[in-house]
Amino acid sequence: MQDYSKNLIDHSASVIEAMKCIDNVPDTQTLFVTGNDNKMLGTVTDGDIRRGLIKGYSLSDSVDKFMLTSFTKINSNFSVNDFKTAKSKGIKLLPVLDDDGRITKVFDLRKHKSKLPLECMIMAGGLGQRLRPLTENTPKPMLPLGDKPIIEHNIDRLISYGIEKIYISVKYLGQQIVDYFGDGSSKGITIEYIWEDKFLGTAGALSLVDRFNTNHVLLMNSDLFTSADFEDLYLNVVNNNASIGVATVPYVTKVPYGIFTTNGGNEITGLKEKPVYTHYANAGIYILKTEAINEIPQNTFFHITHLMEKLMEKGEKVIHNPIVGHWIDIGQHQDYKNAQEIIKHLENEN
Image (cartoon, rainbow, N blue to C red; front, top):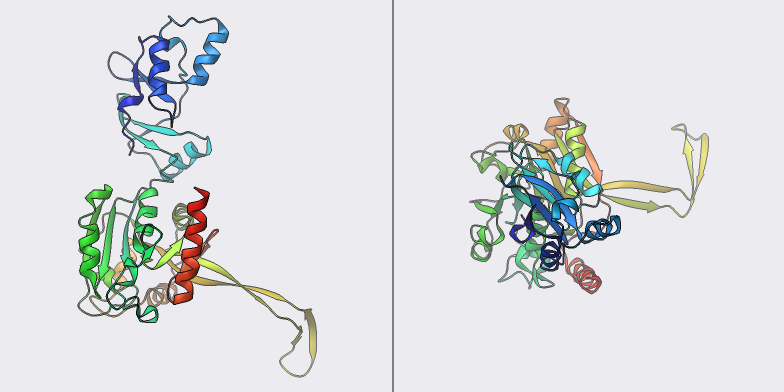
């Protein structure tokens, strides 16, 4: 959430004062104009001031002559689509107004990709055996990637999508994760830890949460390095009324030969010359209806794929959503090296 105090200006202030205020917020160059009752009346930018001067207004005029009154805002009951629409307009700062038209908070849309109504669980209890000796004294999620641990990249990405409550399932060397993140307050979120007495697979830890307070829950592996679009996955789940949405990675197989199709016997019915097949691999990121968690046995080893099969047998819809961008499951040493190369490239771009 944005500290917007420097972006406020009274409607009676002079445009010269507004120009000084804009200089104090160089990143956004946007001011919110308020009335005597603190209601938001409009916005003003340096562009609005220039256009006003061209119209003949003077520097001694009040800022309300220059402000734009048809501004983009949302109310406290905003939806994900409201947020998405504002981003599509290129808005930098998005104010949230109460019923009286007063600003209650401001989102910086350069930092906030969305505001998803989701709680999340990150699975971080694995042994990381394939990455030994790196994981002998450090849990895999805490291995450094650039300037922070692998799992912190995922937490920061979740925060950028507006997720404020995260559960982390821990077991192997889990206290290191607890000590590093604490209760999450340093990041402006809430973190709770779910300790697994025994390994519970990729979904069993969900059964240990007393109550989720959102209609959907995001579940993901802790050892991923990805630019997955959580908003796109969420909207596809909601729009398709799916019980589970799975993020997937396209996996292309090229066959270097001409492939015959047959009738099941020795008769050839067709020929495909060097065909290319696209399959979709599980990316370890899921959004599921909270009610689907009731199908998970309590404190029992249970994979998310078991839950998918169970729901599909009941006729529930399970969908997938391909990831556009980078995705690495850091399971082996080469994966870790690849992720380190990508993070260097991303840091150089910034």
